[in-house]
Image (cartoon, rainbow, N blue to C red; front, side, top):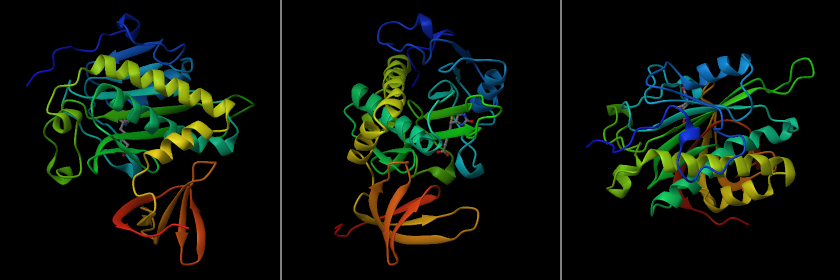
Length: 275
Ligand code: BTN
């Protein structure tokens, strides 16, 4: 199966649906690169403006969360990073990955009949399998009065049909779920439109719209789950209550409600009553 279109080198050539003011208006697209996050951070250090997009048809050293690798089959997926210079207060930065997950879900909903779910903090699932991963990296604390510089990396499995043995059954793609090739360019445009809108809304409505959109699609809401800290291996069980104003996961545990700012969530899929 081959994909009908390739992504143009410059997204400004993108026909039709790109409506953004900043996101993707400056862009660099590579045939192959180590990691788009690394390269975008380099570009940011050289002065790339907010919303600059660096993408690739293939990554040779793609990174996931918690030091994991992110692999791809060349030319079939969306792999890109955006330079962000958020002027948000520190306690709202945790909403950025949630805004990104929401934008991905909305773009999928626009281009396919699928109903994606969002697993905190930022995995996008279809049929309980991961279709997209998001990696936010960078300086959270501004240096010398400057703005924070961050890079938001998104890896969305679009037309890939085979996955490495260790993630078979856990990963999926849009083509596997719909049975049809999904053109990447319009999908990317929809994603950037939604992302700019949600990212900008974090500054104007304190994250209300993003939190509502996220919780509406939240995987495991009201069910029991285990939150594990990958570094220490420490884990806590409880019922997922939702997301706090700063993006933290709210969990009802035997010791009362706890907020998690990081960690890996395993969903049990057994429903419990939430007060
Ligand atoms: C995860 O572990 O779920 C996050 C995966 C993030 C992958 C994307 S692909 C584009 C960008 N470049 C990287 O090296 N990683 C992110």
